[in-house]
Length: 132
Image 1 (cartoon, rainbow, N blue to C red):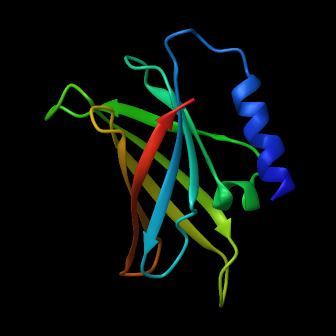
Image 2 (image 1 turned 45 degrees about the vertical axis):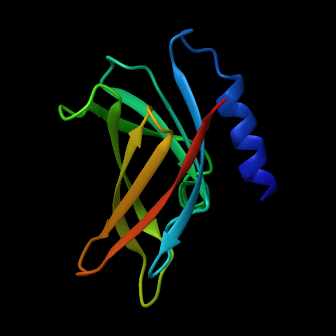
């Protein structure tokens, strides 16, 4: 937990353009786990990448990782970030999880989905974000 707080402070302290959005999201996972309760996203609309950071990323990388960013065509306020985390501790062996988060800036909602390689189930979560 201490590493998560230190890394979160590092993300906030990084110099970034004034138009970058920094979101702190509280997420409720549904199902089999692998959805962390706190998700930190940072991106600048119009760019192709942003960053993602949560407890799963912290466990494996210890720092925020790059996420691909795209604006969704169905709304001016919706964005999708995609990232993958390899070697997530699991039984019987570590897994790779491909995540995507859909953020709606109009109501500050987030939907997180994860697909575990080699498994048929998806991990999902929903929540609310606040701009930091």
